[in-house]
Amino acid sequence: MRAIRRRVFVLLEPTEEASDVWGRRVDLFLMSLILLNVAAVILSTVDQINRAMPLAFQIFYAFSVTIFGAEYLLRIWCSVEDPRYARPILGRIRFVFTPLALIDLIAILPMLLPLAGADLRSVRALRLLRMLRVFKFSRYSRGVYVMLDVLRERREELVAVLGMLATLLIVSATVVYFAERNDQPDSFSSIPVAMWWGIAALTTVGYGDVVPVTALGRVFGAIVGIGGLLLVALPTGIIGAGFVARFDEFASEPEEFGTENASETAPETRCPHCGEALPPAANV
Image (cartoon, rainbow, N blue to C red; front, side):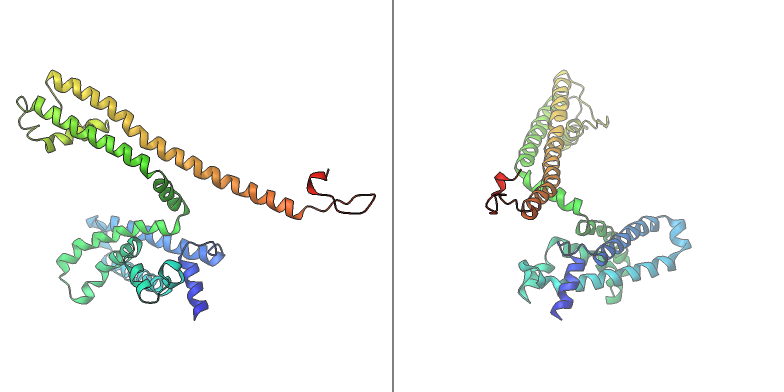
């Protein structure tokens, strides 16, 4: 039983062991099913398609919830193979409350509520939660793990930039509110309302529904637009530098591995006079 549980864990979780053919096939099948579920949710919002194929949607959703429900239970069962959740009871409880496990549960919950006798009117709204299945991609994509690692490594720089953006947003909304409230009491009725203009100006979206008309407001709006352009570009540079550093690490690993193997498997060179092995530095 332990061997079976370990095999299931290797198939479902991204580990170094999960590089065999069946592990890739399981990942591909689950990723394809997630994409089909997202497409089904999108198409079901089109009345003509939803009315034409209601039974097809129901059968597909039932099949999907069966697969995802079995996956969820199997993950709980084999989670003790992860050293972080090694304790049989407490470990599984801790696993159930991890973010990805909660997403798994929420994604299948709307299909289970009708079976429990829940009000169908409330279930219709909860069906939108099936879109959360798209977040399950993070289990099967190595690129997502790389992105999360980069964000984790660069979190201090990103927090500093976000802090500067928040400060500029608050200051800009406050200044423009006091500059424009007399001329545009409806558009700038409060500082929180002025923050909508601040967000549009900082991100250079420029919706144009609210714009300053006073001289002070326009001058400060120009300053905010230029400052926002510079600050918004900073996170892109920080994350990009993190990706470059991480991919450089990946590129250097095979070379290091090859160098180590070459030194280990290099044939010995012996002295032609005494027959003793020469040190590596003496090999020519």
